[in-house]
Image 1: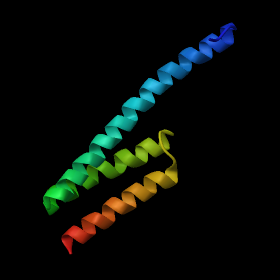
Image 2: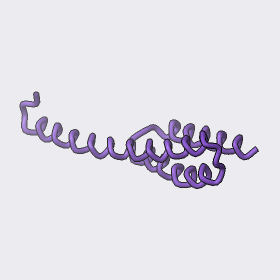
Image 3: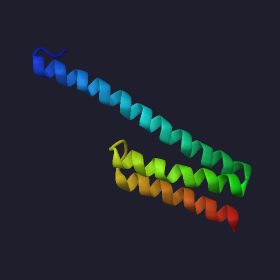
Image 4: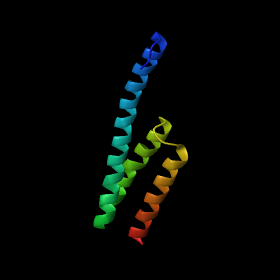
Length: 88
């Protein structure tokens, strides 16, 4: 456990940031799940609409430091590939 005042404050800050990041990660995963469900059902229009809303959410998570930029780009790329394959 933290002993110094600065360490106690740091622990409080980390706790708050962890909660914010957890919410952001959860929100991003929800958007990705909607795209995957639409892809699984084979509904091209729904999948396209879900992808359009998921892409900025994923990139926002990367911008806020919830996940690395390359990871976000890879996720978007793979979802786009799956969407293109569904349309073909």
